[in-house]
Figure (cartoon, rainbow, N blue to C red):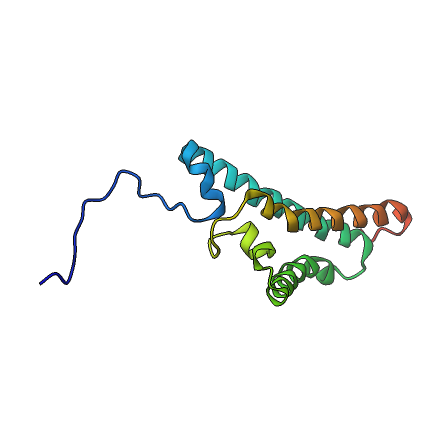
Length: 132
């Protein structure tokens, strides 16, 4: 009948169509550590933004909410502008987009680092006004 076709699986069944899967050729552990470090670095940057905002703003809720809003607004704006490959959703968790060069994940990360540096300069200038 030929409705279902069975075939032997190959020895390499690993998905290779997402950005960080480029590290799979060096082994599963390398992929795991590279991706885990990437997600950790992004979490550190978003947390740093919250912390710096807590030193500036009187309302803790707003300081903790702004990084969350940055993430979602940046996703929305990247989609509207037609550059979804640079959205945080596609760079931190790149499982919804085809494989791209590793440098593309650094574009929104660099944007976040710039935000951190600007906030840091504001915090350093206003040490007397810290809200903690």
